[in-house]
Image (cartoon, rainbow over all chains, first blue to last red; front, top):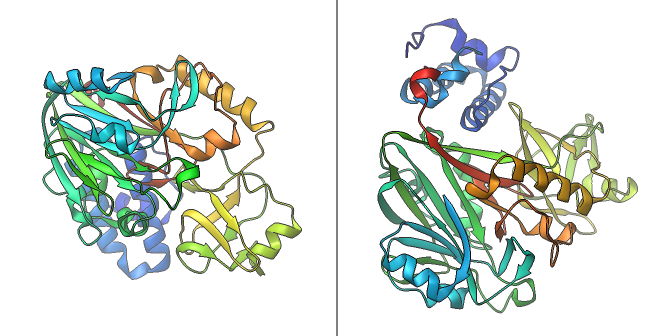
Length: 69
Length: 334
């Protein structure tokens, strides 16, 4: 599975833009938590984007959600 | 998964066959089982093919078909990391936590932020006792490997599956957000006195009374599309208590009315049956059992233990959690 580089703007966009429509419960819960964190602390977006990237890089089951970010 | 509501003698034979098992039963039923590859949690409430019942003699066993390996770890209040530590590759984890304990509260508050929590399916439930025994008997969990009973700590079983088997955790929720106002709490916790209702600060308990809110219906928040409930425990004069924590800053709404709760629940379970719920690992909430008056009632759908809180990565209320095992299709997904 090809994962966009951590520098790809889609990671930050998923955390601050329109809420992506994802399918897996794990992705929904993680994405929601990270978006809340960034909303309360915008300066933490780099760390949150890295966590989201790592989640997709490590978990093949989340691949179907990647196209919706 | 093979779900069976059976006698302790039958469960003992399953255990002695070497099967990997999750067991639900009364404290005394669990304590009577032989050692083996299982963990168990206390509840005397079950949904069986014959309907909802309270039973202290039988146990509900789920055989994990396709389990290649397993590890059991104790989850203490000061070591929630045990939930994600030492997981097995290509597997899932099953956690049991006694209700009304420090580890229960800490899990509710801190699990959502556990590093790598979402990287493998985690399902489980909060163990309980018969409601008439609250305060006299303590909820417990049993480590089948050692026979040890815990009342102040949880247990997790990490299960390794064969490489062609794929586990997926999901939830099925009867409730959706209603069309009422947005409710936002200033602090995270199991109780609240103040909140904002559509941006206006109010005394939450007074507001609920003024609005004549039906507190058998939960608060619902959307987690990127996943509807997550927080159930009302008590409406006190100046405070509201919940069965799971509300999260500061998150937008909640009262659940949309479901009409006749029992009837809505029956339809919902029938729908689940059509989706193959009988072969999934699943458990449902004591509040649904109470509010839908399920004792003695056959829903034709969901079977499994009735629990004091459900876990699918995080603590849930009034929600059915299920774990399905299927042949891996990851290549196609990728």
